[in-house]
Image (tube, rainbow, N blue to C red):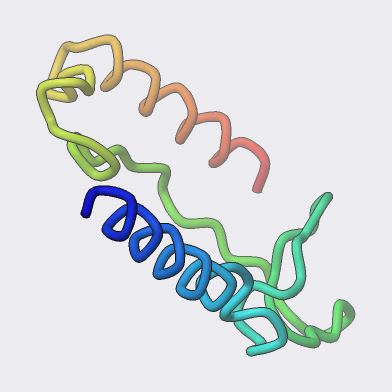
Amino acid sequence: MFRSILRASLFAAAVATPGCAGATLGSGVGDRLVQRPPFYSGDIPVDETPVLHLPIGYQRGASQAPIFDPAAGPGTPIARLLADMNRYLDSMG
């Protein structure tokens, strides 16, 4: 009894697994990995397109539970880092 259940489970895993790997290959989503800057999507004529800089921000809890991210309130190290980064970005203009 146990062997037949084990065989059925292994068969189901062997049949289902190949359909999962690379299911989106060739779909046009994420096929091109950008290795170095400039990071943009599509054909952009360099001579005619202005560059836009947006302020750098931080959202606590955007990628994991907020308890694992540093606080971002006023006076925190993250707030000072963001202010310095945005000040540097503004100086490049």
